[in-house]
Image 1 (cartoon, helix red, strand yellow):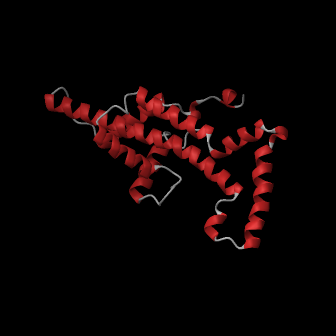
Image 2 (cartoon, rainbow, N blue to C red):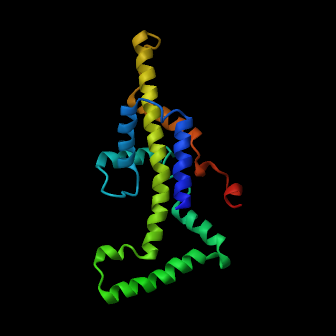
Length: 193
């Protein structure tokens, strides 16, 4: 819970610091919803094909799924324990024992999803999803900013050609990629410390 709280708070503060939480509240709410519908894993329901395509675009642009991945988190947790595999032992062996007991007493299948090993996996997936949520939100907010600025410049005659939607979206992804903390841009030396 502490890592999730820290992750959520620091990411939201980055959004506040970039001004993305102080923009038009209606647009912000719309972008919150779109960001929630875009993130992976699909926490409550399946994503639409359009959301899946948008997520793939953001992944190709190195915005989402670019932070620490679940196996790296597990590795860090394991390194903190004695012998290097503390969490694997706890959630592996203990989880298997609990799952056997579930089978013996015949619990409904939906309760089996609460086994320690599965909870551990869900927590790792949630960590990545939390990070991606704020990155998607920031891309959407930056895209709105660029779109509105270019429309105003075009209307005033400052520019003679409007960028395409894709060009505007790529500008937004570049801003987010360059300003929001991104684990994939950390060198191997620092990662291995």
